[in-house]
Image (cartoon, rainbow, N blue to C red):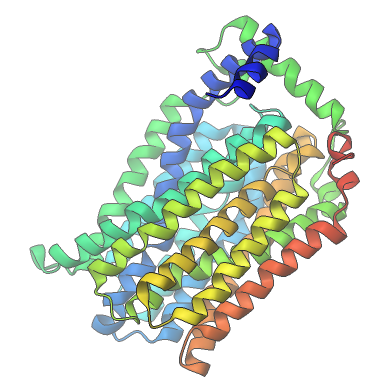
Length: 445
């Protein structure tokens, strides 16, 4: 620890030191389980990207069938996301996670029985319906526990799980599909769906038993700690102009919500295009299924590191716009550079790692913004609307990349399109969303 760090620590008031300890306690209670849930959410949503390395040949699925099946998930997800989040605000996160995770886990495991394109489409749609509301629900849940100046770090920890999931997704998929292929007359891809679906059901039960719906219901907080959290949250909302009661209609009429939703869409295009097609890109370079799984770890680790560092720095500076914009541009550069090394697997992976760093950091910072200007009563609807707009990229990205690959025979054009989307998101943040639009607490940033 350097001298500047020691002076900064000494400069903190007793209240700031107490608050830091309080929110550290809350973080350790909530975030490990929420992160574990998000890892399984990622696995069950995207494991089809690895499964298709065997499914397409064994079941005769074309790239077009796979692209539609991967994307149709997001139709069900988009249709039910807002109702799910509005219900969460009424019944609480515990019951919501039990419902969501139990149903999506069973539907994901049932993917092992899909043998026709129609069955593939139906099950992917149902997984989307059942998963709807998970990520925006947790993001809304974090607004009930963390003031805005602490939320980027909490959000970064949550999205760290999204970035960490590929670290386990690739090796698990590679090992499962290689060494369990044929065991008990099941193919490797069938084992993959089964072994990654059932744990979601079990973790949903664990979330129901472990989490508290709000600080006031947390038996693990003292009465004084509950009062302190409630007071800090109220002061934070008042400081940022996020007071009063708001309806879903008000969120629909707020231009900032739509603009953030559009930026989320542009970022998520890159996230899901890489989630579903990165294994195919790497395999096209001559890697085996097992090698593809392990090479995928490198971008994931890089994304996690950037996620934490940029999220913490954004909180410390209390600045969002430039942290988002610069991260998005870094992601765009990584995708564009990947096109130069399509025949060099290691160099391409390093470029994808740069892309993952930028995309992960930008996504984290973006999701710390809505709570700055929305009250609690508006946050559930506003966050769900933003997530629905952004999540629609999950439908567009896999099909777009599949169509462009069929048209051009490669991934170069797709990577340029995704890179351009990231640059556009950075411009929108800097030009179309002034600092004053983020709430009074950000007005001078």
